[in-house]
Length: 338
Image: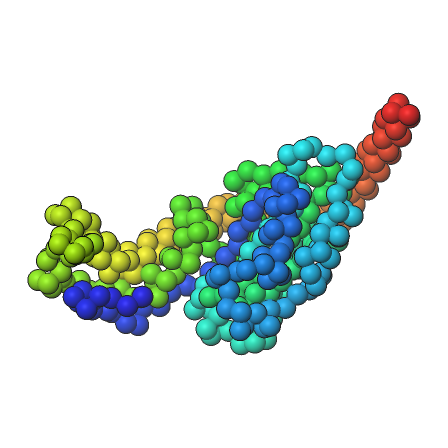
């Protein structure tokens, strides 16, 4: 964004910043909403924010069109479901603009592969009905659509992304999955919404401003509308609003960088607390082993492993039993309807 001629902006260069993994998701409840979002994703409808000349650089996996993705979605949807049930969850997964400027083609490909793998691990591979790499917008990103179908055949977005705690965990595990590529978790606890993410990074890209000054010409009232015999000009309130906006824009980068510095300091404090907590937990775990021989510790660990396997087998049998009960209830309801 170019500053007006009358606005003197001086910039400090050489400010380094962290590269973040960015993920957001959106619930889609109606078939029309899902179809519309998929058409946008596959560029089957007008997309003003996309560069048509770069659209051929996009890459589709899983499904090659909105119709194909809708077909896979319909196959997964249970016949009996609530009218307001979430049919699909749309994900956008990307990284800081600076990372894309420095990442090699191989790193970028690995980012998209790891992002898609994270979704498959969370929902199941067959639940991912669309995954498209968009390179025709300002920042490359992965757009993906998943069906929030549980293992027992229920639509339940709540079980996957319900509540702030689960969303925070998702942000953490996703960042961990791409950490190898030099990316960190996003700004935890930030009030910034998805709509402001791009503006936030644009502000940072402007750099910090050591000075913003206004020329005398900027104080002159501007003509808003000119007629044959009359003209409307700015009043004092309009002038003040215009100049305030210009100053805010000039310092936007400085404010964004200050916010990021504060977040980094907060993260350092939180990491120290986490480390202290982990050390205490480690001490509580190792304390019972003090005074034991290596053979005795090995025997205890083997016993713990057997207990773990027994618990896993018990949970497996319980899941099988619940599935049998569900099928029995379904057959019973089918007989009643006849």
